[in-house]
Length: 162
Ligand code: HEC
Image: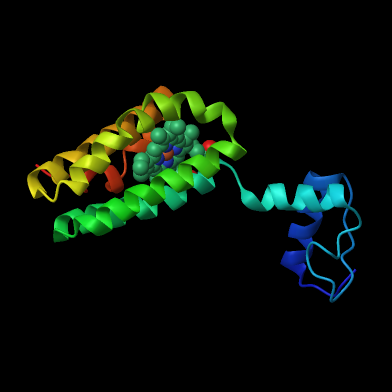
């Protein structure tokens, strides 16, 4: 077991208990994956590291905020790039959490092409409406997922086009 700090030791033991039912000794210098005892442990470490929907949403919300700023700046090419990035984050997230596919299709993917066309139109009025369509899709999925309280935050309250 390598020499680690008190908080890291607690986290490692807690993590290891969640991973393999026992603390995993990682020989110094072999790395966090190659130092693991076997492939099952390596996959469990990777699976845990990838995170779930919360991680996906954090990534998406950063791009969503940048997308708003891009539309506000009239930089619709950048808005389209962030919308494309939201698709990338969500589709990778669905590989990790396939049980979210149905709601993703019903909300975000139902309007994906339409919003992309709004940004690609180079028409600022259309692009603003496109952002609001995306916003409705985000918020609609939260409500459908019994997570309406997630919509009650500045990200959704403040970033709007009238
Ligand atoms: C497939 C349905 C779905 C769609 C579409 C969706 N969300 Fe989420 N969102 C969720 C779920 C489920 C959670 C709870 C995640 C968890 O398990 O922690 C969540 C959580 C969040 C959170 C809170 C994350 C945290 O841990 O604090 C934010 C912020 C968020 N979503 C933003 C967005 C934005 C922005 C969009 C649109 C670009 C969006 N979401 C679209 C389902 C969705």
